[in-house]
Image 1 (cartoon, rainbow over the protein chains, first blue to last red):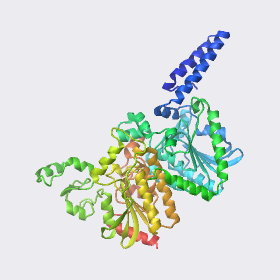
Image 2 (cartoon, each protein chain N blue to C red; image 1 turned 30 degrees about the vertical axis):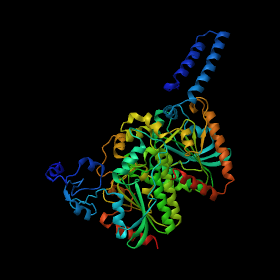
Image 3 (cartoon, each protein chain N blue to C red; image 1 turned 180 degrees about the vertical axis):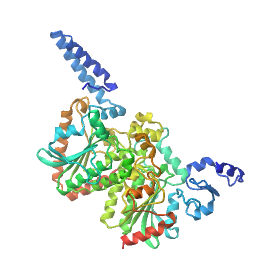
Length: 315
Length: 286
């Protein structure tokens, strides 16, 4: 698959094209090799420079990058022996959300998360990661399973939002999300939440309450997508950039505001440049946190979770 | 429009200012036209009828204070956390500053925020009631609305009495972004505590409710009641129409639609609401 560059990455791609050209020229020799190595170190420097100074809007673009790793990548990279579990037992199976049992370093865990899909066909079948009520009801079923069998729940968030459709309303989207919030806020098992790409609105929060809520460095999280906020507040959908900045959707701002517990650093140039690397970082956080939670009595854990929830915007 | 010529023949002191009328869905002045059937109704008659149109039975939107005064015995109640005012967590600014929008809303309707919580009696039974105020930034839920809801629920726990919430809201408040979103978590969590104390929570759905309020506290009632034809949904009709590109069916997201799809327990006429609420409460709570 051809690599897609974001506009602000153009200076980097220009240098990379230069290297390609040198390599493709057929010339060999010390001069060429040293030129390539010079360019390579320039690329590294430039990538560092660009990625350590991303604007909020640029982060939105990185969070939505077509090559950003998805939940299915994380399942493969971080966990083993995954058994996908399907269906909400009420109406249907929603492929916008994947759930199931897996092992994290031998230890069984329950996983849930949105999957946006990769190929065009896959994206359509997964509705671009926008779940319907049955998707949330499936996660509710799996959350209960985690509680019943005393397995930690790990939730991966990457969604533009819950799907706004006629059938979603007929089957009670509001109720499905509300029930999940109620369930998660006192689910009797440790819950780790990782926002990996887009944390869009109630559709994200419905699997987003936990004992440790973290965000990847270039992920975003907000009450509405920047486009939706722009059309509601500015009455102009094209003001998405302004909306993203006003809502402070980026991980570092949200950590400073006390709304997320941890920001997980991404490899140089973003998660899309090194899927393994970012998976390792996530894996380390999970390992550390599961270890911490093992030491805590479940009633203390729930008490702490409740206090944390109550602290958000407490007046 | 009928109202136009009618206003012209009225003496100036009863003529309503149309710019003012836009801001306020609560009827003002001597004559009022029903937003549904356009019938012109004498103000005191309308008020006597609890702002339900005597001609077409349309339930006109009313403010939080009206709700409370209809509900509580002898119009008497003790307000909870009445002094809370919003914080501008994000220094949010669109075409206007959030701070300015807040003070504008406050001076327009003389309320501090989009919710009033109160403790009092209905038909002799103690209850805590929260009511959203739609005229305050579309009844949107930011941190103060969340806080007032939580304070109300905690008051109910303290007084060992039931909790009722009248919702009407455009959803979570954009200007507080994630702080607003997380109020969905807070309000849902506090309702669990209410349940652990075996105290009933009744959610009354009034026109309109969308987004983060629908997808949290409004749908979590032990009993969900709606006023006739209230529009309640997760996504707004315009958003759905833009997404699916079909015309929405008649009555979509209205109370009757919600009842048919199993989302609410009953639809209750405004005039019967107080007795219905006190009756339900007396069965759930000793």
